[in-house]
Image 1 (cartoon, rainbow, N blue to C red):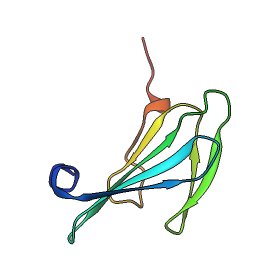
Image 2: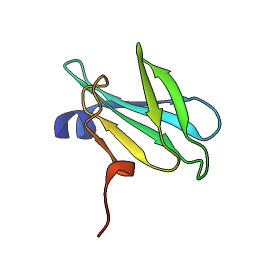
Image 3: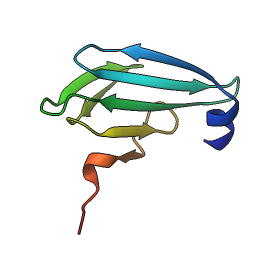
Length: 78
């Protein structure tokens, strides 16, 4: 993801209600971040042919813009 994030073009799709997708893309690859800045309401979005549940407040990292790689809502704090 490093090359895509540092050298790719950036675009954002707004899904309303504080939910957005930020896409970093080069000719070879793309990486996406799904964010839900709404602190109380989860969101379900359709993005690039896939459906994602984006819980309230976290960021979901989708390294290939298809398969969820990491979601901050799934982190367990000890």
